[in-house]
Length: 318
Image 1 (cartoon, rainbow, N blue to C red):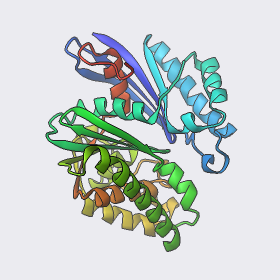
Image 2: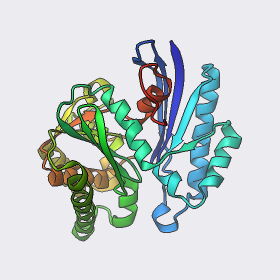
Image 3: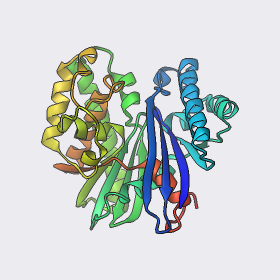
């Protein structure tokens, strides 16, 4: 039995997983932590990680490192995604993290993020047949993975992140119709371009399943079920319908950010970016022609542990 930890340093939140892997490659979660630090705050304007965001995130990582020491976890893999790989001052952030925690953070590409996420998703949504699309909506970008059964065919990354889109398009509260219109046009254009140039050219445009993972999508699953306390068991494999997502999207457009915190299932700290993230989900379902999305709470964190430590899996880094 191998016990290890993974850390995901994202644009909106930093997550920790401690898990055990048995000899057959099965993952058992021991502990999870998640804190919203908004590392990508103000990135659209500056192209840099702000000192405040850097400080908040470094502090959380120090807390995680101390917690891992207390739990005697000696094997930890930490990765950083969209915001860190794009920031002009990423080396400054990585150095600050290393000095404060001893963690050597790996900055992974969009393609690597997609491949590792797929390993985590397929560990829980394990009955896909024919061709499917897996989407991972983050704070700074969205990753798409086209799979045939469990075999990845292609990966794509585009800047349709919930934090990025919010900072770029939403200035009013609640947002004006003009802001929502510009947001939707931008998402539509990016998705249509990707579909035309990538999906159709390389994999065709015939898919049997749509699977979604990461915070925006799991939050929508929780909101659709009106969860007062988040329940991973009710989230994994939950089926979101396009009708339900569009209903939530329309409601969010009418509700100011300070009033959204009362909505059941909406994670505290996600009130301001959930609208843009939901717009991405709606447009993905429309452009790809899906009326349903299967939800997976498993993704990058689980994929890191499985790809690095499972005896039955090929490493995502090979």
